[in-house]
Image (cartoon, rainbow, N blue to C red):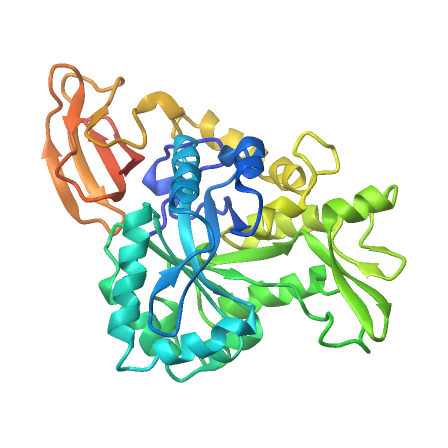
Length: 404
């Protein structure tokens, strides 16, 4: 399912398709389910992100799926994110080896139909906008991985997104037939060293490694730049001794060490400070399809000048403003409500304009004229992400909306 990704949603909700095809401006943020949801919902400005990946949903040995957060909390998060034009995907897998036995069992050919059906049902019941595959280690190296990716893709509704998070080393034996199924891949360009290599203290996520990773995915794996999303760590590792290495989140590092935001190392702690995050964001803007953050709660507040997310936006915001200044972008309230359950209002619609609704894959699902109130009935559409195209003799404008 090679769905075209048509997003430029930092603070802009709607864009033209022609610009979005090559937009390098995704800001993808992971949120683990073990965080304080009440505090998260209060503090997070979801308009700062194009996509949120809620991590992690996983099956038990019998294929029953759970996510580690209540259904009510998940739906509250999705609702608030949608109000800001941010999409929320259900991320499956993760780096913990405790999930491996269940996943190996569920990835067997005899069990895949059951677990795939359960994953899709869970996604739909909670209102997620798609599935993010973050199977790591032995799972991504498994001979069953390509078949699982293919079969999940074939059953996933066309309006849902399909993405992955992957380390470069784990993709060596994966073919284009598998990788091309994803709408984009978040490249985990970090963890080059850590507790598993106690005798190799040093930077786990260098700028040079980011350059290598982007080049590998584009030139060796032949992914288009728009499908490559550069992973940025909001954490580091403290190599206290050969037997004691622990992770440290960015907000704790800058709280303990004055001026640490301008560095990549303090004492034996290695991380990415603002200069490196800025340089990597510029690299991604120029050569890739955006940035991905593990994970957003590890930053200081956005109002704090030391914020890494704020640093990312300082790089991307000028491009956002340039696109708006062309007249090709439109403001959030150009169509509303967005998301919508029943009717979509098009306040800028002209008397001679025709309206077409298409899926992200380009399939036409509705066409016609709006009613006298400049609104169209979308109740018959399945839940998902669509483009509404407004046409007349002078212009074609495509705007994104979410049908819940």
